[in-house]
Image: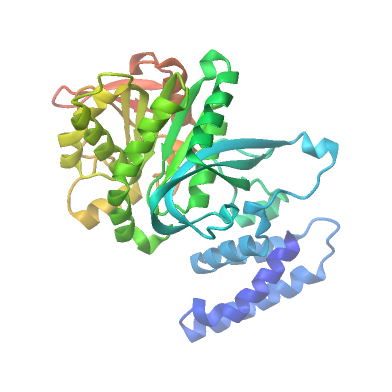
Length: 422
């Protein structure tokens, strides 16, 4: 791993003209990097490598270099996300976990003749079904899909989740296999959890995050996700808004399929960020079409950091009470991603407070004190307190007043909500 960093740093030198605009700054930085590389190469690889650590610190000190290095080190080991790890000894094999997640997507495949190559950001007119096997290392930490490159170098540990295999399945086979597997689980584990990702997620991103959530929540039944065609890029926000709007029908149809065909005793929904737009309108459309849910309901409907117009949410959210046993809304006042969306749209968002979103038949939970990440946006998957709360919901259907770590709070208007974290 140390040599990978040195080689990447050398490549970075050749790319500095495209990274640093100011000629004087570029020249000074190049000299520092060249010197740090020379010192790192000169030291023994058998013991501590203080010069390598200094090189890493230098590359981490500038956000522009840090971003380039992250992509470069990852690109230097392309098999870490899609190919199985190399053969391990019997002892090492015991340290590995192979976790499966099911998928449905309206993305076009990268290669129609080889679905194992994954899916693109282009929209498809049909839904595709399948299963992904994901490698989870023993070094995995709850809430993480993998450490940044510099931490992996320092610890000499690659803790990233990896996609081992993507298997495409015909629709009938998909549901038959899923139902058969669920039938083999104990009654308490015969559940399905459907994850709908947000903005800036590739198919790979969605796969790894769904696997991480399912693994951390100990979902032994059917952990599945719907991947709509997000561009997976920072500049793709407007395109993603169009893509999630165009995916509402497909999302709704898949949710009903899981409810009717998976064999799960209970089906739970977890929606994050922009994915909430698809869920909100899909559930509302289903409720209107069937004049309410007169048959089976979903279990928990979990709405995390919804990037949804606050007024639209209020207008449509009554459908959740018809659709699910319990609906939980997680919000924060430090969510920088939703804050940016609010600035862009010039109207309040359901997932950002103030103002606090409190609606009838929905439990609002303020997670501001729980997410310590830079953006404060990924708490549904990354904050241990929130994951514990979601676990309590899924496995116990616990009311907020009976969930560990929640504190009841009243607004100035006498509306009740809940605070998680100290």
